[in-house]
Length: 419
Image 1 (cartoon, rainbow, N blue to C red):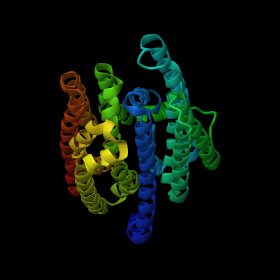
Image 2: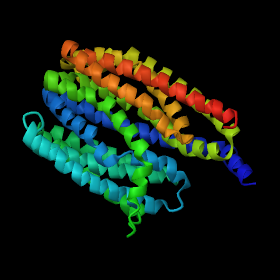
Image 3: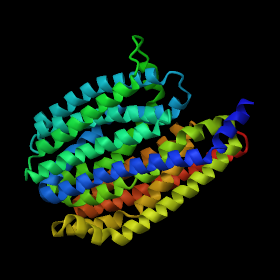
């Protein structure tokens, strides 16, 4: 009877599910669009050199943020579907991120102040790191909203956060300032305020009994997976900065940011369907197989549309948004466009893998892709600058897509055969 109830619950309310998915996807896409507008606006205002310095600070901070993120949000997205006390779980995750964040912050500032202050200004790095730290805790709470299907609250708070950042940055631009500290400081201020608001709404429980150790143990595969994902998402900008300087990063980053910003569409579908796929995998394998087919077809359609749209609009789009000083960015954007198809299908395969509790099977493909990406960037960037980063990214994503596809198809065959 429980099995039948679960199946009926998921397949009798298509209209409600579609409405929630639409709201979730649109709000997440709008939030990412706003962040892309912020990036484009700053690029045009600051110019390639200053924008490259700001982008590089965020890139190195994001690359090292795994020290406190530890894959906990992805673990929570999967395991939270079965949690009897989500508020306590959120409290434990926040405490783990808080302790890890303090350690990370001290290490990052020490490195920037002592080892390479010429590349990473310590004061700017502090504000950038605080922004990323606060936003990471904000993201954890939003995962809790998603799991409870508080989609309206999720959407409103996420959009307020991004609109708040955009509003302040536009105001600073109107004041004609080019001080990078002001821009990073405003972003941190909004991240901190929104984190406090979401915590007051969800009221996480901080119990005296420390359960973080068991959570961290269970989240190890997710942490390693996230580490590998961050490496091949951020390492190109950091290597480019070291070898070719701020100007090269300033022209490559807008194209990279526009491409990555569009990941939000398949990522939103991934975040929405994982809890449902997880329950279906547990209670009805046939329903799970049907839903997986729907998800993969949807991801294919999204990928084709995004790739075609970006390829056709790449050069006129960069000319319109960024101006003549970013002519090189249009070519980079065209070269990166196939990644949207690769990434959309990867999100579909990843949803199947995570729902089937086979996260560890993602690690081998991710290790292969991360190592390959690192090697290609180190070899190609000194030779052909940002074009090398584009080639490395394309090759890496193609390898990752094929690898994920093999793992996901094996899981689907196993589910069909009752394994």
